[in-house]
Image 1 (cartoon, helix red, strand yellow):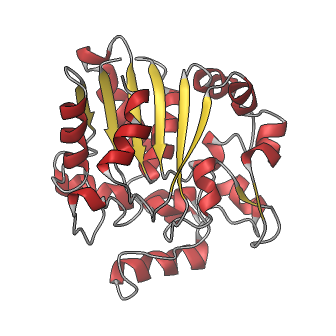
Image 2 (cartoon, rainbow, N blue to C red):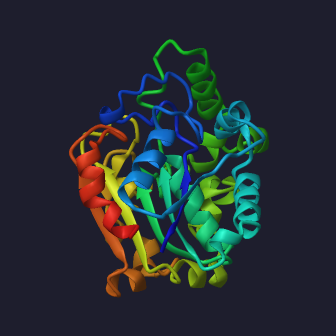
Length: 291
């Protein structure tokens, strides 16, 4: 498939690649020449004739960066679905690659918008069961980090915070499971926590491959198991469980068990911190799924 969608609505500073020596200190955007722009260029160099679209959420890179923090994720997903539907080069289908929070947002696109068809979804450090903690925002003294921490700690599931803070929309508190399931506007919906949406389940299973990359030395995503669809066991905040041990998998509420048995789930590991990998690793491990 010679079309690729890239989505980088990153968690905080996350799009750093040692190969390209980025020095960002704020949220990333679609076109940063040191992160997403460099990845786009590299893929185009490696795969002749590929069409790569790096999605912009907003009218410019400033809006794109800000929307990664403050725009309702459901609205972002709808915006992306509209962009894809209007692009004639994607009619035959496309592969998608999401970096950090962009990965779970693109999964929502697969579940909600099957036209044009997403063929392969590559999740690079995505948090598919959400996060419970902010271990490394762009600096411990950052005013933005402090604001986000206070908002999440004081009421992650309040209507105001849920609506206007992106990170709250995939905040998953295992100690307040009822609140999470009831008030999470985004993650609880796409993870079938309230009801089983058969359309979501059917659409996700249309993927040919769902590739998940976990960073073994990740100091940003808490818990890191979320990158492989695992999470903390409900009712406590120390022990984790794998995807295969979860109710989501055992009841196959999202179709992941069926996909696993069909060989559609791929679990990859990178021995680095969040989104830290070399061009050589990327080329060897991810590009084969884009050809």
